[in-house]
Length: 319
Image: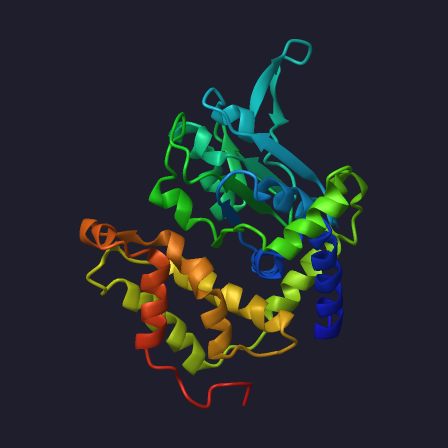
């Protein structure tokens, strides 16, 4: 697929999602970047800003298999992955696939489930497979988990462990809309749910072709080294107790390729890394107690790293 076709398809998906999530083009772009980077998206924000609407709108914009899981404290791992059931007629166990066997899995309020249930997503998010009773089942492609969580409410929730957060390619916060966007939302959505009329503008096979196009985007050795330097720098900041992992480097590179493709370029430039650095890296960092006391955030630290690490010069397209 050419970059023009990719740009046109991505534009149609973004416009479709924006019918539901008004006035948030940057958030929608990060969601598309995550989709094209073969990653998973964590939508984290306060109640009522459209976290679930973003996830549902993106899922409905693509004509592929979609499932939704409402995470609750009593949810079991088998409710997510599936379970083997004994068939009396055949005398054998039959596997009944769970909701994770879909192209797009929407996990609503993921931090309401127990750590045991949250861990059911670890294998499928990283290896695109599920193991139940010693049998391994491959998941289809494309495969994306879009999870939401409320960072403010702590009653009846379980914080996502570092291993779980590290498997999300990007984290995005929607934020409150400006007054003009909120007024437009009131005019258009107060008496009607826009999700009800949302139809698919692409399909799973097309998305997979987009992903393959993004994989072919060129990344010069200098830019690859710059990506490694950025991630390595997070491990040397005194304010950080746990820096970004090597998996974060891979996700940063993939997201930068997707960002470059959406910008209409066949090659990655340092600005692409700068654009995706905060969504890709900030949620993986664990700050020290002193940093919290000084009211420093992981986003502040990532931005400081971007200013400190030298940008390679003359590293643009393929030679």
